[in-house]
Length: 169
Image (cartoon, rainbow, N blue to C red; front, side):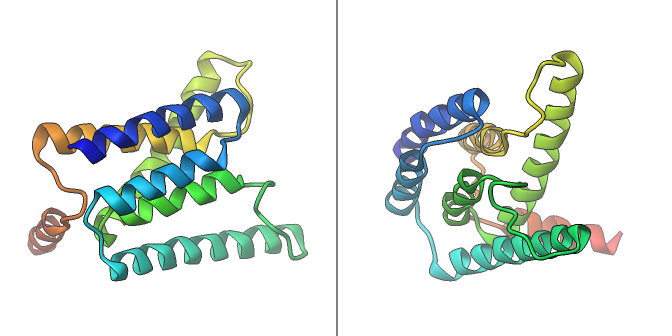
């Protein structure tokens, strides 16, 4: 509970800075990572799997955008901010792999949909997506949900159980 509350201030600053400047300071991410490592139980193999998943996704994105441009290119600061990429690190600590995949996909889809809706109603909105801000909002929702509904983001039993029962029907 205390660790969850300790995550809120840096997450709120990330949301504020990313919406305002489309950039976040590195120390908020470092603080999130530190709180995640010290305040939550974690397993090295989970972090490793999650980092590999992010690395794989970034590699596929790099290959796609390089192929599309016809030359090798770096996606950092062109398609994805360094702060967004670094924001993924504390997430790798906070979630078991199955929950991480679920959270990551859900928050990416939520980010895109939210930004499209925001651009529709506020046309002067910057065309870039404040990905870290939207993912921080999703993380706050997960933390709130874990407190209210006694959901543990580091226990992937619920998703494995759901997938097993879904596969039988």
